[in-house]
Length: 356
Image (cartoon, helix red, strand yellow):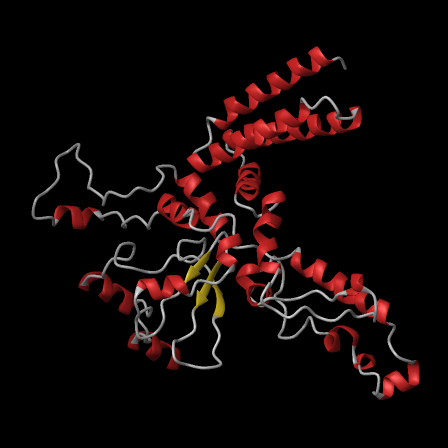
């Protein structure tokens, strides 16, 4: 492929991306894929790229374009994939979000498993990573049990050189011990759903905001999406649940009846008008854990801050029952429920029939 024909093909692909990106329903999605399309186009125009690299990048670009077209056409799986790439549930951004949580500069570096070999340092598990590995909301599969990453759990009794198994079968090889720990670390961290940011939980007993700001963990400085407010934007886009529609009897019992063409007003919210889009973002929130940091209390020696994982209240399957979406039952409907035996007790007439 000549340089001129490749340039024309790149600009054609770039313009096709921009046309589909303008149809995405959220500003952050448009910004993310606009930057990605520009970076991919610049990479394709690199003169030093080999023909195999250029062909591979073209295939990747057309694959993303088909995903965008399918997502804009209403494809559920395609739109979920578009959201996963943009919010770090897959792809390069996922590891950029997870990488700061896998390091602990304040911890003492461990000694190598193989004596004298610096390339055999065992993997470390900082507190944020431990909290993510042990919670079902932040794992794509079953969460790990406590201390499941220690060599006693990974290797078994042979980890102790003075155990009976070590005397019978010989000591466990050090290089194999390092390989087991490293393979387990890589396998389990791939299953982690990284958080977009770290929230600071207020201390019990209150405290000034400046003091809580000073006790922010050092991980917040290296988180790429910290203080951007993506979680709050998604929750605003999803919005709260709409109030239940009024029944005909309730509409007739209104003090000020509605006009023939007038509809009952609902509270003004900033949520997205499309219910299909809101459902997709609620599904996204179920895969975005919220990592909360509780700072240590002042004046308490030996206490350290702790991490906890929770799920957003707007996530799919976590809509709480409130007065907005559950109406108070009236006397007539309550009597019918009690007559049918749904109100918590058996109907006396039905009990008599059962006995007879």
